Length: 124
Length: 131
Image (cartoon, rainbow over all chains, first blue to last red; front, side, top):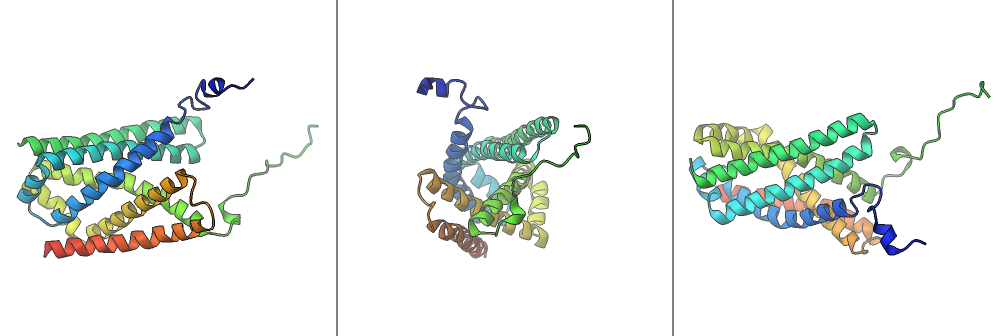
């Protein structure tokens, strides 16, 4: 007999259940809020001097929102690109390599952005 | 048995045989804008790292973003971001079980109209604030 418990045991073909789907939606919702803020910041900083940009980005609230946006975006883009790779790359070896590169890329971009924001915030 | 000709296995119909619909186009564009945003994050990283490095390096980055090619990339990036965001909100509507009826064509159209208008609005706002 197929009971509800046996259905969720093993959590489906990928053994991750709805984790991927849920995290994609969670970060999507966070991105909508955070990127509206980020767009607002960027729009006011276009063409401004280095000193103005530094002064704005080092304000605590803006720095925290910026780091939060970067984390949410990095997770969201890793999940999104993972889907694209799994859809179009059928060779197992190439797929695994690309999935690894995907993770490296997202961590690389994310960490660079976070490091930069923290360095700006904490001063030279 | 051995002289059975090796015929290719039948494949399921793909993109080329379907009539292009708004929802299909927007689905494809959602993927394309997502990929563009993915690689475009390098620009944000460059801008932030340049700002963290110093005024001289920051001016170099700013000069690139201020050039016509830089502006063109940023305009495309703005549109891709807004379009992907509106597409995501459409996905949220679908997640609630709504929006699968005939109204889905209108939703798809609104995504494009909305993304173009909001992008233009943002750029006008940036230009007004800069002057």
